[in-house]
Structures are given as structure tokens and as C-alpha cells.
Amino acid sequence: MKQDFPKQGIGLLCRLFGKTRHAYYDALWRKERSMIKEDIILQEVIDIRKQLSKLGTRKLHFLL
Image 1 (cartoon, rainbow, N blue to C red):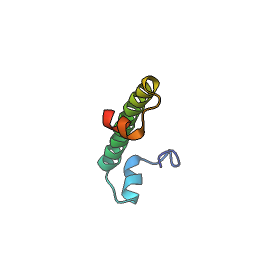
Image 2 (image 1 turned 45 degrees about the horizontal axis):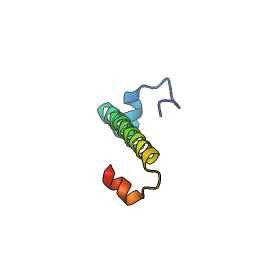
Image 3 (image 1 turned 90 degrees about the vertical axis):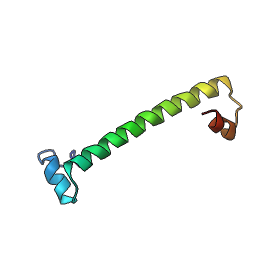
């Protein structure tokens, strides 16, 4: 939203949707942490697939 309205403050944009600035930043941080966790899991899957290329998804899930 900030990209579409660069001159408007985050506080104003949040009030338009009935949210607080803290809720906005909290969601932003949560999304960032989630993406970091996904990247770590994907890297683990890639490493396991390099070693055991014919491993099925159930066993892969169990190994993770």
C-alpha cells in the first residue's frame, strides 16, 4: 500500500483500514520471519534431495 501512496504516512493508511501502525509492522515482521523459515526448509529439502534423489514425500517429511 505504501508503494501506491508514497507521500502518505503509514499511520494514515492504517487508520483507513481500521488498524494500528503496530498491527501493520507486526504483520510485516511475521511475514519476514515466515519467509526466513520457508527458505531454511527449502534449503534442507534441496540438500536431502541431492543425497537421496528417489526419496518419497512422506519419508522426506518424516526426515524434516
